[in-house]
Amino acid sequence: MRRTVRQDPARAQRLEAEHVFPAAQFGNFRPCWQEPERFPECVKDSGKALTGRQCCEKVDPVFEAAHNDLYNLFPAEGEINGDCKDFNWRMVPGVARDYGRCAMKIDASIRRVEPPNAVKGDIARAMFYMSATYGFKLSDQDRQLFTAWARRDPPDAWEQTRNQHIAAIQGKDNPFISQYTVKFGSATAAAPLAAKLAWTCGAKRTCDQMSSCDEAKFYLTRCGVKSLDRDGDGVPCASLCR
Image 1: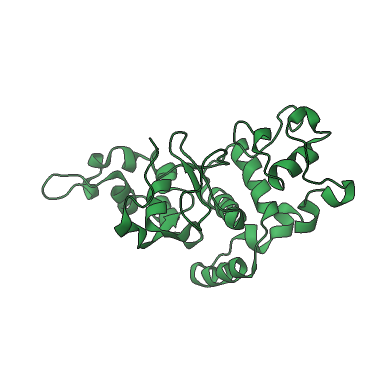
Image 2 (image 1 turned 180 degrees about the vertical axis):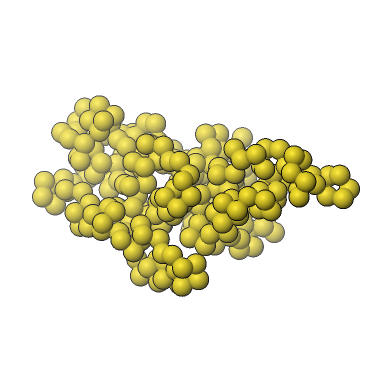
């Protein structure tokens, strides 16, 4: 049964720092996370061990740096942050938007979260940065989806200014923002070919009606024909978009 909206009104009033690349995903395979009791620094005088997360923050410099990296931290409404848990960023078709004006979609049954369109690129560039900086692995499916998100939602003025402020603090910028066109191409080049080919949202609803992968992507992203992406990975019509 899906979680009732505003079940935690106190947390809903709180602004929290959310890890875009979830700490559990880059921490749960580390020895300090799995067996904190093996590390003397992580055992209290009472004999009780710290949690895995607390232990890794204490004894693992890479984890500590990644955990505290400002490029991976974004403000989030507390209840939504709690609902996201450590789920994967994915397309989530067929799920109602349960958070009022916030267009976040969460399906706990398949552990997926789809952010609002306006920040999909921000999410993607943070994920690429964390992978490149700390060696955290992204699957081919992740890379394909995040590349599509980054191209459809290029950095705006706020994201670029944020990048500059964090670079002044940490001494390093996020190249997936500052070198956007090098990493992803120009925003205009990445846009669908709808104008050239005169595609319009109309009666087409199935993959066998599509003439190309580009047309299928147009109907999925611009027309909202979610039936073209049955597995919810952000890529329509597997027979066309292999």
